[in-house]
Image (cartoon, rainbow, N blue to C red; front, side):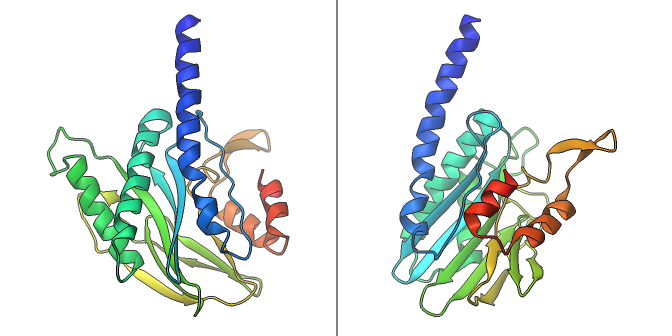
Length: 233
């Protein structure tokens, strides 16, 4: 009982540290017309993270999903946030695919990933966007994680490169998409945490799955964003 109490106290304090880094998102995200963040860690600290930063007229924002849950995942999320702060601050030409490529190189460097049998294969899945605040042109690149855009009652999925940010047996170049954002568009970025939830369907325990998640986003996208967050909750 004492050990459980000590570990939980430690995790709660770690959660406050992680939360303070995530709160930095609000400083940049307030430049968006409207947004919500639905974030519910399963084990106090999380391998999922979100991040945003503004440089001149460009807003860079991302959602990441790191290898592992709880403490291992949280360690990776802290690394991801630190690398984004380092990389984006040094950029002169901001391109989503270039940011992911640099992150992959640094993750491999810092974790000593050379392809050996015994080394860790830790990494992260990400959807990353660079928005030009003047032209409303959105540059997207993804590592496994897609971007959904809903416009005129139609949901368009911009698919990610099937490769993580980190070591991989078959490393691919990160592809990117350029999207002209229009007034009224809804953009959704997410980890697999929501679609991987289990629930009861006709007396059987089933996973929610990405199709149900996608259909539900399309169903609720016309609601204001705070209402959407409450409905997802």
